[in-house]
Length: 222
Image 1 (spheres, helix red, strand yellow):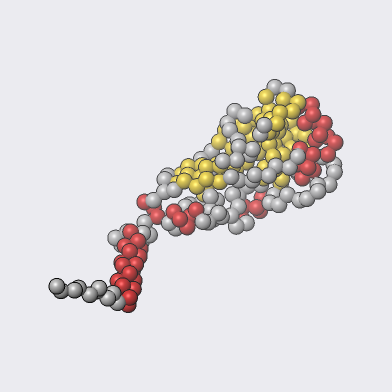
Image 2: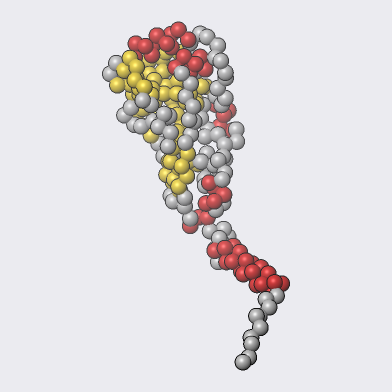
């Protein structure tokens, strides 16, 4: 009877085979990331980015102290979304790099018609623009999952705002806006709501009146 000896496997041969397979797979990945003329194929791609935005809302008293401007306003309209890049266009990167680059995002401008000013000096035209994180351009979409800061056309709100100045548009990653939202309360009749909390508008007015001249416990960065 013939006895078959076990075949010895040269570990060096296996290693070389694995290395070659990895190189081939990498080459395929790189080729698929480019068009036939060698340019990146980002223009043919698209992605959805979900953002929680600012998830910490100070109490009304502290928000009032931090705010430069507090208004009761109607969200009257929204404009076309835009990229907050210097060029105003999508960065020329693939989807993965776009997700990992928080400085490049889509914002949507909302126009607020001011009905009443509770602190500070409003714009002379009686309206202001707030750029909200989120929007859809071509195949790309940014979804703002933080409902505490969301704005919708038709809402009436108490908006507590930091005035970052017109030069804020030049700072890296800025959405190019003058006012930053510290917090906002949705107004319905004689009540105001933020998250799951609903309070009378009279209480909102009293809290703002009692705190608008006081120094904040911490500054709100722009």
